[in-house]
Length: 89
Image (cartoon, rainbow, N blue to C red; front, side):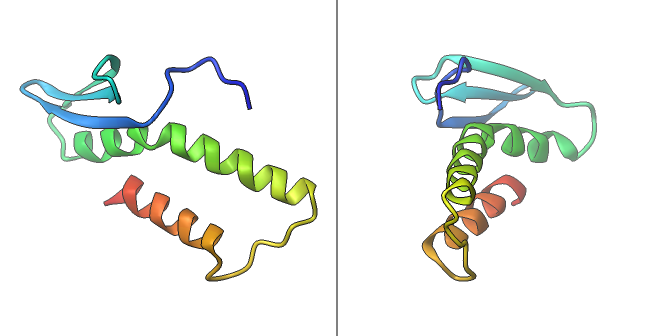
């Protein structure tokens, strides 16, 4: 799939005034300011997983279009669980 966004992986980086999302080469992708709540870190981690989520969704879409079954405890299922864990822990 061809995309126009900054290539991943992205990382959530703690800053003095909140969180930033950076590309692998350290260039800024986004800033997520801390709004005084505990959600800032969680939001930053979720945003940082976006390129990997898009890639995985594209792969799943191709699998569905090719009539490939996605089964429990398969390597693809492991990838899904690992990405969900990274985005929410």
